[in-house]
Image 1: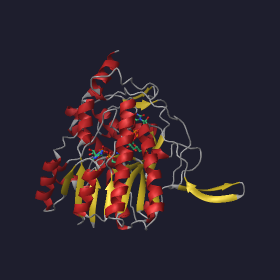
Image 2: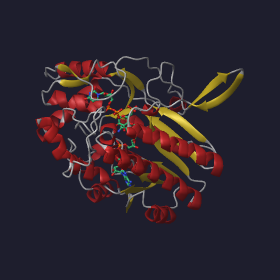
Image 3: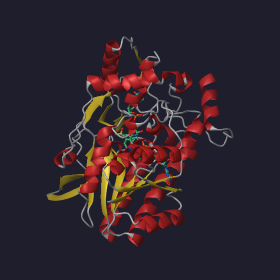
Image 4: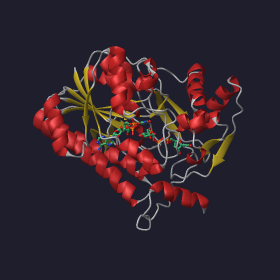
Length: 404
Ligand code: NAD
Ligand code: USQ
């Protein structure tokens, strides 16, 4: 299959591009390296020392004899996207190329506006390019479980049957997103659903939970192929962050009570879920929604698991409860369905002790690279920064507010 991976230099995209290339598909990566720029902006860097993309691709070619094509550019630039799709003629486009951090989108007005423009405009461009050039192409779009929020009823996979005043309909599941980033995904989902209906495009919207881990079979082939592992407060996600915090002997930063419950999955399951979606495309005019996670845990469950794993490795792990910088329910009902990818054949890697040990071992290997000033949360949902007063970069703003 000819597959374009938009955002293939990122965390999920890199692992996916290698996995699909290893399976014999013809893969092209599209990326504008903006994720690497955000690290510069924030003064952060991945725990693992990732190489420039051209070096990573050379290493992949050298190791496996497989070539991954590269198109460097911005998906919000329609001329660039158009020429890329025209040249590569993909049968599937996997769209990871968005700003994916909730805290980044909540820094201030500029970051909120940028996030929604980047994500919504990029996705609209992808939809128009498919319609104009490859109307049969299957779009696999990364959404998020956070689109649903935490309703007090079971979460369905995309749609819910509603009975109202004696009538019944199958409707999109209600959305209660918790950040400008999560909202951008809701806007995307509506646009995708709309074009499947009006233009007959085929799409799979994968509402993914929080991904953890960094190792896949392909990434593990060579140090030059190593994937990113973010631990900073803006881009680090909770389980990856807790493993790094344990490795450097800092208390785990549980926000508030830690009863916030989310869906989680191993990065090895991310790549397999994408493959399953590729191999079983949506029909023309169909907009499928799959909930892509394998287990649900509360933040406290995760903290206690990391503490336990620390014991096995002889590390004493402490847990701190710090004021929650986000506006979210700290205790709530959560039960989300996730059977459609299992029905297609997903065999999950559950969060076992051995898996946590291996993730902790990676964080221990690179712990000298950790910048401890990047760990505590500074972005506050209730108090966005005033961007008119900010003429320096965000990192400077963050250290100023930390100092005051
Ligand atoms: P990432 O930031 O590591 O990767 C995104 C990549 O897209 C980066 O390489 C970036 O440079 C690129 N990109 C962004 N905007 C672009 C643009 N306009 N043009 C070209 N390239 C652009 O993110 P990730 O963790 O790999 O997440 C990938 C997708 O999966 C995102 O859409 C995210 O919302 C979704 N997702 C991620 C997680 C998670 O836990 N990481 C969970 C659920 C959903
Ligand atoms: N949290 C802590 N302590 C921390 C970090 C986070 O208690 O040090 C809490 C947060 O308050 C939140 C939960 O952990 O309740 C998850 O936070 P997160 O930063 O791990 O994940 P989130 O912001 O939800 O975003 C991540 C990805 C995003 C993806 C989303 C999937 O960055 O791209 O869409 O996970 S989901 O959570 O299902 O929406």
